[in-house]
Image 1: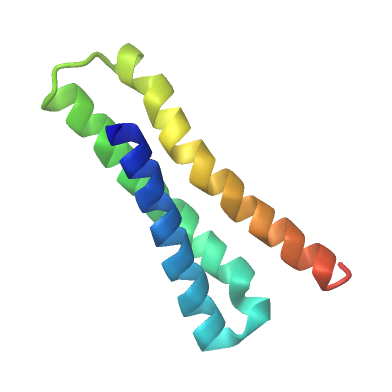
Image 2: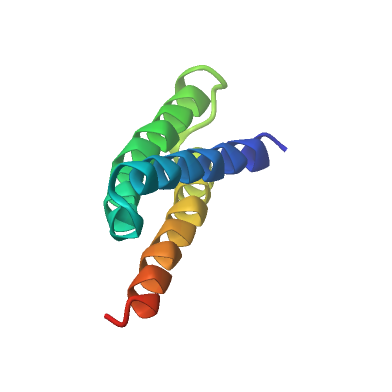
Length: 91
């Protein structure tokens, strides 16, 4: 359940980055919003990995698949947004 909540948080962060990018620079800025989101989300996912290892007592080997899932699902959605924006713009 915690993993799903964290992934949901990733989607919320993605939405905030996209809304901010659109407000600042229009629809062409969506790509910039995604590229801001990716390193921020990487840091958040890495912090979750660290908490699982340092605080909860899991090994890195046990936490690594969860880290990859937590990182990859929202980033995959973000890359889909970039792809769809490019297709819609005719690029």
